[in-house]
Image 1 (cartoon, one colour):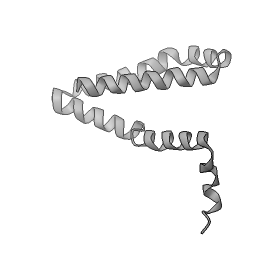
Image 2 (tube, rainbow, N blue to C red; image 1 turned 180 degrees about the vertical axis):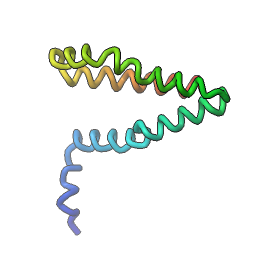
Image 3 (spheres, rainbow, N blue to C red; image 1 turned 180 degrees about the horizontal axis):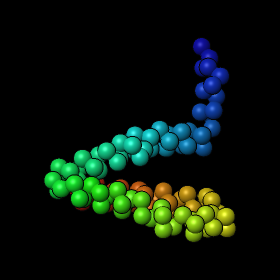
Image 4 (cartoon, one colour; image 1 turned 30 degrees about the vertical axis):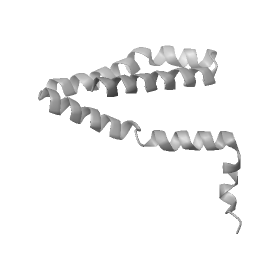
Length: 100
């Protein structure tokens, strides 16, 4: 029995890697991560100030570096930007896991 046509893309190694990375990363997309981190802060600190501080700390870099980031994105190889930013996210997520 032949596989359905829409599965033909999985014959290519690069597509399989892209797909598996996207599926595994979807579990910790921003929504669940934000809720989990807020719950962790609430249960450990018992002070709403720290929840507000977390929200500010997550939004402050966006406000500070938005214009600079756009200019850099126009001048630097996008693949390199993605590799660096995803590696940094991975390292920070691992550090948070270890510290917790």
